[in-house]
Length: 175
Image (cartoon, rainbow, N blue to C red; front, side):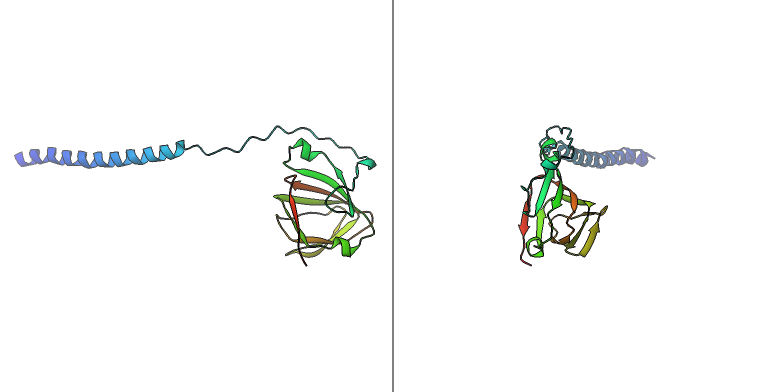
């Protein structure tokens, strides 16, 4: 029996040493995790607070000062109200359609683009989609940098376009 009593404290001491080593390892691992959690990732600069934008239809607001010479644009005030986060405008393509002028393959370097046909129709080509006739009430999105072009449109076509961000680059491609 004396041997058993002597070996129990030795066993307890060995267990304490092993569990002490495990505790130290766990403690080191926890400290490493906590240290990583303390690393501050740089925050995006806060955007200025958005304002309300109200735009009522006025014929004189359609301007020939946009991306395409064959179109008139009515800015809806979204770019200014959102501090450049997005833009929205109504586009009137000027008829009759001249395919030599409008059918130029291009893409826009945007994060998001959506078009809704308010009036008339427009025939488009989008890479991977092919030719599509969009009529009054049709809507579509164009993924970032998708190659596309207008093929034809009615003389009365009006489109609503929403784009993020407000400022973007357009690249004309050789067909």
